[in-house]
Length: 112
Length: 504
Image: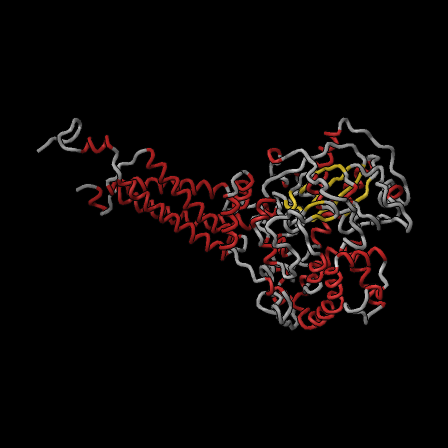
């Protein structure tokens, strides 16, 4: 079977790389400075999201679709709350980068 | 003019669109993979795979020095005609057939019961009330219900009948243990050979477990035999006057084996479900193991659903490290919860015994009352703990087996109930979701995980009210879940069918 087979998960890995590249482009577009801990937090958030969706599918496969939907609603709500927190953290600029981007500071752009 | 301006799509925008499309693809892929995982036959954990990997839970860190059970009072052995519900109701049925006008208002002597059963009913009068109700009310009602709605369950009955047909092929001992256990199976009276020694008890246990799995057992454990768990009378093949006070010398060890009932069928309990699949499989497994050990010269008696029992299994399963006793009165295991059926082989082959385990069932059952809430007979206790429930000298959860059996006889289809198994949060397949929950719960000393899981079980999973499982007018013959498609009578059979209710 293709689904859940080795090729399927290989392709899922490739698609994941696309999602990661898209996220980096999105972060650059928003002007977010991506640090290692922001990347880690984003990864954790995505893992929670993926597990929620996967658990929904698993429960549907076990003929527990109603339970799956409730779990999905609960999980997506959790993702929404965590996502809002993550969004705010993403906009946070580390001190060293703030200095670097302040006019007149060493390494920063020249003042007027 | 740059490339971006030519295409109208910057590299950054392209990556963002790709990422968004990837996110959608991953979400769809995860749902599809999840559905496939939920349906995966490998999550059924059992007889299908025939390998030792089915007993996958690592018990070592949960083991403790037994025994799991110690008497807290005066010990008495269970009576085959009193405590054993099938023995009791069969005796009551015969007495009631001789005295069909007897009612609960009449003196009990009027039934002409054997003295031990009469004394039992005096000690537990509610059992007499339940057994009387079973034969005076429930069974006649059930006959009428089956005439009206029986066709709806034809395929479930036919499915069970296939396993039942095999029952006649499993022999039951025809002579006392000192004789029959030393005879070759189907050997026409031929005795077993001289025993072949094993290099060590550890290797003997390893061999027995390997073979038990290969013969079809999902679970296997070994315990020392405890005579307290033997019936005080009525052993198979024993004539009247047999001395039941003496434990047969060769019943030193108990090999406990178990297989699950099929998960989708057990969830269609009580009316479209059966236990016969697991009864048949575990009886066959035990019989194979008996044949193997006898061929090596060791006397064996098999206690199985098809061959019959001379002992009670749950305490031996607990001592053998298979699991813990739950509120439902039977053993709850890490792999299968309560969804398994057992057989025991008593033998004198020297084997290393297993240690009992604690993985949080006792604490979980104190909190969780789902089985009691879902039980249409009210046979399961709602107490907050089994403290003070002393039965025959041992403290454990009390089950009113008279009420339980009464509801059995109310059910449609192949009969029996199994709702306590279907509703138990431990009775879940071996998918990653439930395995993670099981592993986290067993390793959490605070009980927070079990509380969270219990909330999820109660909030996320639907279950009919206990009354809905009953016959009209109390209920509508509901099932816990709809039956699997292959048991859908209307899909396959060209006969008129009267639907009993919504959940049927």
